[in-house]
Length: 363
Image (tube, one colour):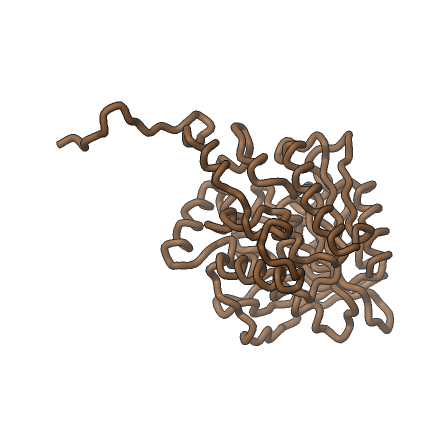
């Protein structure tokens, strides 16, 4: 028996793929909880309400009572820092391994929580940003990644050389927690949803807990989050979720949602986007609205004008929203926005040098 249909009605999907009525769905997104749109006029009260809504839609509950129980192995000394592998309980579900670099000297030191990108490369996670002294088999892949995106530098090593404590951990599916295959991402995300949980929510909770752990170390005075691509998304998201973050530098991930949901955009492919997808959140807040929860703490956003993942219109929309939030706090000087006219989706050495200099001033 064929299903009945209402005469003259049909449902179809464009080749993008987008539903034919996607424009109407976009028009329905008014972001009513955004600062300046929300009826809440007291900024601190708004921050609490907006953060509470984000945390609610992460689905994964808070993990504040879980002991970190850090275990350190493979500690080595080099000419500018001590390198350690550290294993932590960021949630009650599993232990996570990361790298911890501490400069030589008495301290305490400023610190950076480094958050790695996606890049559809899962055999390395933390190794994308810190040279893997503990695993020669990953070193070649790590060097190739640094050459492709970071002008041959390991960002974490550069920061430690400049006097920063650095913590970098594997996100779910990468490095010691993988490697995940690219086409397994949707199935993994679906499994989380079926279990009443969320892949993106788990990563968000872990990142916030990692920032709290780093801020609590005696060797540390002040924590910044820093990331490229998905790592940039994680960096500003973490700052929105915890006050342990004193400053944030986000390179090549900031846009208005509506401007990203256009034919040909990478987000419409699914798969990787599930790591940054909190169902229902756009009914309340846009991406820059979430980042604005961290205002008026110092934040830096770099983008590339030639970046195919983030249309220029979306970047402008986001920058305008961010500027309005920081300006309302009389803190516009704490917000650094820059689009590099000749660059795409990269974090080149000249961009790094500006970020490092900025971190020196805000930490």
